[in-house]
Image (tube, rainbow, N blue to C red; front, side, top):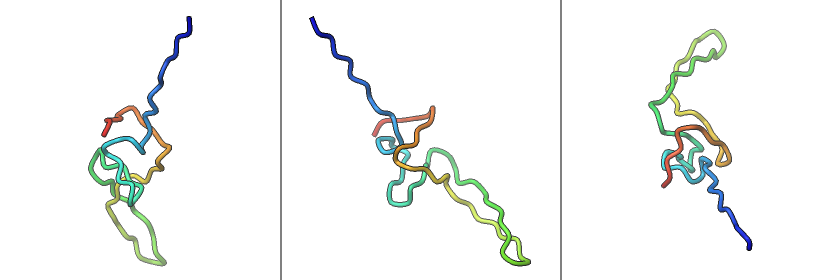
Length: 62
């Protein structure tokens, strides 16, 4: 008797919150990023950058 177990891979690539064209996680609101360019301080809001192979505890299947 052979028993096979299927394991689902819960990575960003198969998550509904993954924006593949920009490699972003859109599960939560954009985060503020502060950086300095020469003497000026700049602020931007960005979604977290992730890769298709990344994963987290808030995965939601597409």
